[in-house]
Length: 248
Length: 191
Image 1 (cartoon, rainbow over the protein chains, first blue to last red):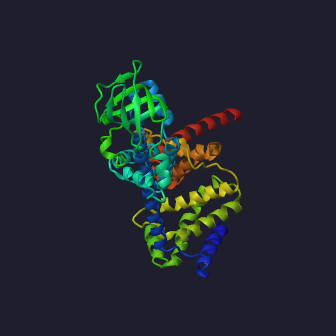
Image 2: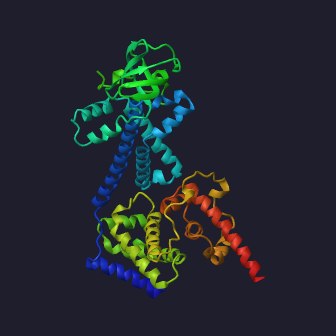
Image 3: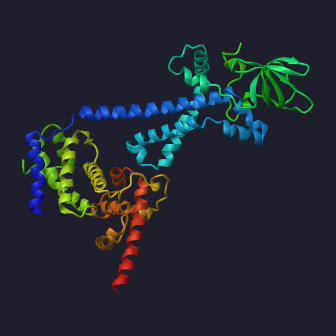
């Protein structure tokens, strides 16, 4: 044992003396630490951005207000959620957690705490970012072809359509229905009849509405019409027409 | 020099090594070799493997000595390197006895006050560990070795294994219970 001890010590010291092993400079560890911190912040910011984008896209297509239609609305909302983006956010949070676990203030506490803390930062940060006109402006630029890198992302995912669900602002009231302008800058004639169910009070111009019904060209045969207040969404957001620069 | 350094704290010696007095590194090797060797022996059985891992650990310690914060304790830092090297060695031997992620790091645990203090029957537990420790999972074995044999605190073990302090406590508690069960079973077989 004593001989072994000697050998290990001597071997290591001999390697040091011969220059076969060298100390890494302090700068190396500082750089590693800095990259780690930047990595955690960067991943958290991307997750936060994606959350705000998900909220924005849900608001754009009216998904936010679907729970107002009860269970059928909740069912449609569930199936219309952008699950790929949600999975992306979860992966980013988990990756960020793996990076953050190098810090003692993170690993010394149960992982549940840090994941909850990370989720709170990402969700509330995402909600805060959703209140800014960032996504509206980016979507507008994407639709005008002025957003080269993320343009496709915004055009495809920024205002996804849910089958048989339409969201917009009433631009004109007619005898057998009304006209709506959607956040996607489209105009629809909404036809109502005696079977159409109305929720949320008398409709007036500039009211925001969500409609469930069959589309035929630019005409929608409304089955259900609900007048909505943006505060009725499951996460409150800014008022509808004012924050959609693509609306005329 | 001989008379001065043996009484110096590890952290002080590490500080001098960082400053370029590399010949002092042998003091650190001499201080930790037996401890780390005993720690490694609980996971590796082949003495050649143990020596190789020990040498690799001290090489890593030297290479990374500048990452050690001299305001903190040196022992958890060197044990952390030893832990990582053991995990690598076991992985090479395809013995994944120390999984990277366990569910017990996820949830919080309430540790009773007596759980945070050293057990009154340390001698009994050490004796029990000599014969029954090998029978329990490595994830319980490791904190038991560090707590009872290397006399490190829960917080220090938490730094070495990079797991929550409460998880260290719960693993030691569960490991002790499992050890007792194995010992009782073995006694029955013998009798």
